[in-house]
Image (cartoon, rainbow, N blue to C red):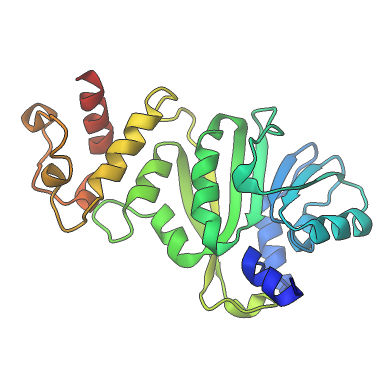
Length: 257
């Protein structure tokens, strides 16, 4: 596989703009003894701005050529651990403590899958900073009643506070993507709104609720026996008009049946 085809396959658009990298460093604000997990380090642009004294960086990349390059080109003062592998197939065994900071310039085609997978490890995470497609960032930070409020934002808001820090233009990359990117921060709630035991049921209800945006919530959840009056939820609302609190009520009501 030639370089261009490989980079297209892996979604490798490398950030090169020093001003944007500086903004990212300021936003992340690496501190002594931080433990970073970097997803998709590529050629190390983001890795290098984390390279501070007493910082530990575990970087995982699917491209073995990238890992080889990083092992040869990067030296202290940070302590490095480079892993060649597919993040979507990883069991995150390296998340051994509850204060990891996750960072990454995520491939657009799998960014949502990566972020959803990390929900299961929310209690081992201090914060997450990702560069992703702006459209996905808007869905992550969406609010009830908006077109961006959907499955992704609802699921994440039960575990994280989310915010868009700034946008990144296509010109900031060596291979220009066709869309604008956004740099986001995700910080775990002090206490998640969904327990580990409730997670599967909660996710199922959210997915069912958005089977059709044109239908109201009652029609989308018609396969479930729900006492809407006792929940005090208007079942004629469309799924994007319900709050997170309403989805939590519905999921817990169904769990009782």
